[in-house]
Amino acid sequence: MSSVSVSGTGILELKAYVNSPNGQNTVNQFIECLRDELGSREKYESVCQKAELSTETFNEINFREFMENLVPFMRELPPGHDSGHLYRDFLGSAALFTGDPGINKAKYKSDSIAGLFGFAHDIGNSLIHRYADKNMIAGHAEIGAWVVFNLMRDLFGREISMIAAYGIAAHGHLTKDLLTPGGFVRKLYWAELFDNNGLVGFAAKIMARGCDRLDTGGGVSQLVRDLLASADALEQGIKGYDIKGGSQDMEYFEVNRESLITKLKIEIRPQDARIGGPTILEHLDGYANTQIQQNPSSVYNQDDDKVPLLALLIKDRVERQWFLKNRMLGMMKSLYALEPGVPSYVASWLKFKSLARQISHADPWKLDRTFSVLERAWQEQNPVTLAAWADSIPTIGELYKAEVESYAAIIQKSGTFLSDISADILKRII
Image 1: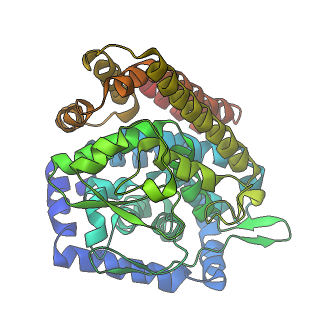
Image 2: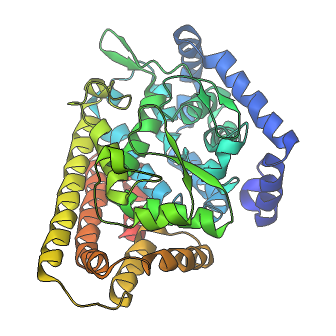
């Protein structure tokens, strides 16, 4: 695995392997090993206790080497599930690691260290397409767990690497076994955040899920990410599937040209009128409504009382999303009342492309191909929608900048080597 981590040729070979029956079987066997060794509280604590002997391996030299080994994989990440997403996930995970009282009171130091690596939970998308993984036995979470374990093991020891891998494999919010459109069953992971005399257990799960929630269910960057990911699936010719934002029953919709055109509309329709895929505001609103503690039926927020910084950050980001949603919907109403002329789509499109490049950081060639698909859907929008997009994009950029800077401010207070790494990342993404 070490040769793969530094070789572009090796990455291509690995991509072919994990998409083959043998590769899928290898990953699936690894996942079954994870379940067998960590799939209950008793087993999980046993591995954490062994991992406590290896916590000294968590140092700047080893961590920077791990980050360097991720780079070839990051280059292969597709638009929407790209380096920008991974960078923001790192900032979110590092903010929790350095600043959350619950994570700081983790029963096992090894558990919280392993949890930090949850920022790489989507690295499996470098080897299989995110929306095609519903047709495979091992999806992006399972492949990502396998990759991260192999990149970590020689640096941080087997036990810490296993804990990190389990958290990544379980970073989805399944509440039951899931039958995929491809006919495969994704089995539920044991994922019980437990409390032992005020000390949190299973930090690895809450951190992997937490940083993902911050950039998906909470961050305004999801508005751009989701459009790019859908367009990328179409550009790749993949019959892909996504889950409707906030769907408690993991309800799928097909990603196709019609769903992409619908997604660009700035509207929220009555539930009984939502045929096919959601609009982007419906998608984000579904996520946002399931993220906050005021929603007792949500599968996402049941443990937020144990991680107060995560709960605070989620609340902040959901409020930004609601502000943006209301602003965009209000702009649509104002423009309809003014009955504007027919503007060129170019002004709004160029603004969107500029913001998307800032948020994505995908390979420029991949991003340009994705843009070619998204632009065609953009041209299908009515003049009022295009004008509303043009007006809203600067606000999206301002909210995005405020979000990522808030992570860095938390990490900087720690005075650890993560402060320097986060400062470098912040310069790249704003």
